Image 1 (cartoon, one colour):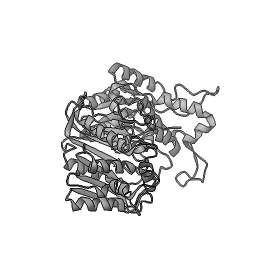
Image 2 (cartoon, one colour):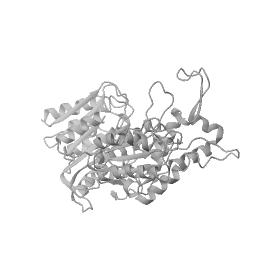
Image 3 (tube, helix red, strand yellow):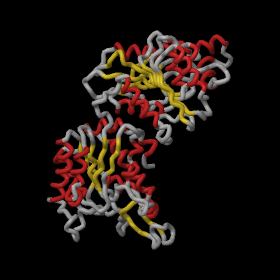
Image 4 (cartoon, helix red, strand yellow):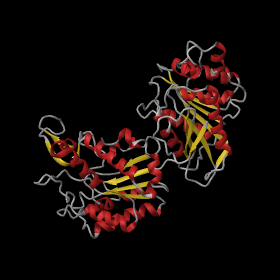
Length: 492
């Protein structure tokens, strides 16, 4: 039985109730009719792999494709009921009235591992077939010697007949009605042998079905979007190009937004001579995978004044497009009253400069986001954190955010809470504290409570991502959907 979960109200639940498959929806925010691709995660028909579900749907959203994740039956289920649920989902996607529009002739299936078996089976045997098929390291054959025994056992039982294994080996069921297919796998997959994909490719070729097959030399089973394996991650680009070829992605549309960071050394990328010092912006890309491109333009030692004077905002403006994000974080260097090239009055120049950044993004159809400065690690004599660790600048930024109705991420407050939780001694690990002769870049040692260690930068990046995830600002709702998974990477 199929249930529709339009608001994803049970998305955190690993599996659906017994006898039920649940369709979770990820529509693109557009009034234009768009293609739809249904995602079937893997898990050997025993469980469902989260990283092969929601993150994949969000990647498809970034291409302008409506998506859904089917949490199909696992464990104890009837195979025919399982196939019916997938076909019912495809039928609902094509026919049911919705608040958003689907091109009914462009409804695809993407399956991973055992989900690939389910997708391939529906694409070859089903009455309600997808128009396009994308398979990632799929289980194809239930016949020895290439069968994935766990998937076969859960799908057909302990001792299936030869007729059953033949009927549910997708390469044996390919017909002239099987849709165009893209597959990728790895040559050394130790769980699902590469021969599964080779058999399906051979069957497609025999029936003259258009297909692409990409076999990467090495990579473990279950990579998903393959963020951990840059070589195998090429499959995302290859699949995007293939979807463009089949008109699922508009060539003229820029579907992946860029998130620009304009800020100072607390966010900036550090060179080899500065390591292990790190900026939080160096680790922010991981929270989005391929759904957002993070372009970190933060520079050491800059204030709003010097960043503008050097033409750095103008450089961002040359690349900035409608739908992009501009993260604005300054304060540490704006308070340097001894340096007239950087100092800004918090109630005058600083406010005016922030508004220049905000208007620059808005006039180009983008979304500005203000981030209060990360707090310095400055404990007072009574063991509390100094509320003026970055002077009056966080308060001034909050005021500008309120007056201009700009979304605010209060990292000053969040970082102070983090330091308080860790305590005075443990919080030192977040910053650049090294004894002498420990690191060649700092032979005399360093005690710096402003700049972050690698650990500290990762923690702050997690705070920024978590703050986006918790934000109620309507202008951040799309960015929140594109987060890859704060629980996987966030601060602990």
